[in-house]
Image (cartoon, rainbow, N blue to C red; front, side, top):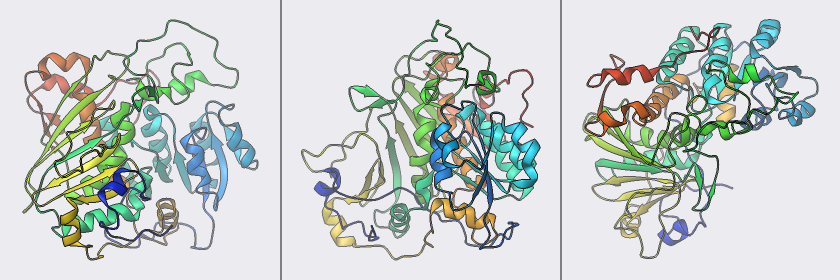
Length: 458
């Protein structure tokens, strides 16, 4: 369905009632041909997938126009569906063994493991000169995000993070609207999700829980040691996999890591945000095993040229910002969404990235922004084309995705159990150039993590 690039095609009631159709994302990086690929535009890439039982399967299916030459997953039962779909692809449980054996046959690698292995699998491929598509969040730690972006830059490989919506029409129009001055200077933004909750009475995955004590046997189809990877070893339990690993400190990055790279992206692009100056957080009860049931994280960003400083607040666990005064009586703030508050108006979206300008009188007076941003052929196609040297740099390449991931994951440091007492007294002051919190040195230990013996990133 073609979506017209206008913010007044929807009334506030249509939008908030869920009748709109749209998607999240935008690419605004300069268009230039990279010339990095070894394939011609009509040749197919040889792609290997790492972690293909869940989201990785969707990623591979979106690249099925290319040659899928190898598939790797630590749980072959979970990956069996994709194995059957691509029977000619060689099958592996250890990505290192796969790349060591067949790297000469591979052009690009898709990484969609649990978060704690993202940096390791991606770095292994980059060091072999392979183009990399890695799911969000790019890494498990802030330090890993910086190191991975640096390695990709030095290797001159084509990269893309899996925040798929960055390539869509809706946020291009968002950026064009904000840059055109439709809502005036912006000093405040809000981003929220119901995750890990699913509405008021269900959940996507558990958080605020402790480690299970049962030690059932490891499934015969699974390599548990490889699944644990660089994290501290613990007994197998179905409380961790599949998908439920997101809520555990050792493996996932919580609701902020899961959704933040999707929803921060359009706001960062529209407001031209970079590294924050400070971050602070509050939450429901939290322990050293899992993230809290609900949290609120506040970032402060500096002025950028003529644009004023911005306060951005993140909410999860079904917490939401106050209702904007421009919203119709009886309309509900979506369970997941974003809001950019300007001096002349407010832009609000829901979890599908459908943006509307309120009040409606302002939307009617403004109309639509001039079309100034190049449109994308599609998130996956961006990466494929660039790998072949036949397109611009992908919109969520690691030079963009790395700093974005850093900002997102700084929020999780402010939720750490051992810092909560100090952080109740003041916020964390961040110096991106020094790569350090300047007012609370003990927080710097959480910028990176200790790896299990035998695992090393760089």
